[in-house]
Image (cartoon, rainbow over all chains, first blue to last red; front, side):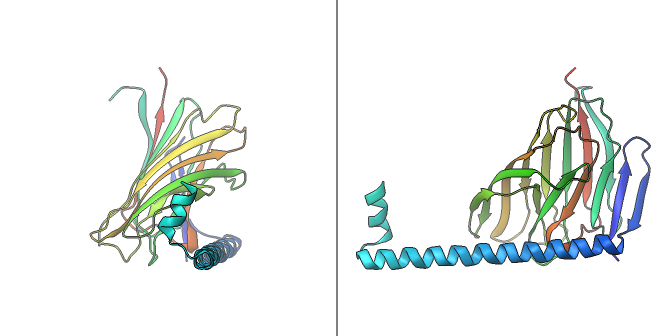
Length: 71
Length: 167
């Protein structure tokens, strides 16, 4: 069971307790949301890379030549 | 070291712990500095996240990340507080993280900065600089650290909270 540690800076008391069912549920929901966000970012990057490659191919120029055009 | 730099609380974990909270932080200093050295129980590197006063809303920020053999990156993200070392990295290595929070009792929004480095006897290892903002006017009285992906900090991770006074 995951635990949380609370350090009271006023008294110095340190309390370690198990996460509640609600906290565990929230933690799992956060983890799922994070994984989904990471996956979405990867998909977005892949789509951009494909679109860029297709455009370069259509124009018949290399990445270096494209950089010269916009530099 | 000057008297203006005071250790408020320190903790070296004795066992795996999901969440660390410094509560009842004295309101008598000018700035706060959190020095962490962590390792986690996940296979891949994950971000450490920060919350103030148990609040996870209204956080924004910009990061710049180097990655060794990995892909360097930059972007916007909220609540970042370092990149913890995963189980796949060299054994017994821990991060080197510093978080600086100026004017933590002010009635203005709270900015903070972070530098975080990993250690790994391999070509992949992350280093990160981050500028964060908590758009809330409440004084900071507690700081909570967690990990993405439902990870936990492992034993021997350390957390030091310092108070820094201007006089």
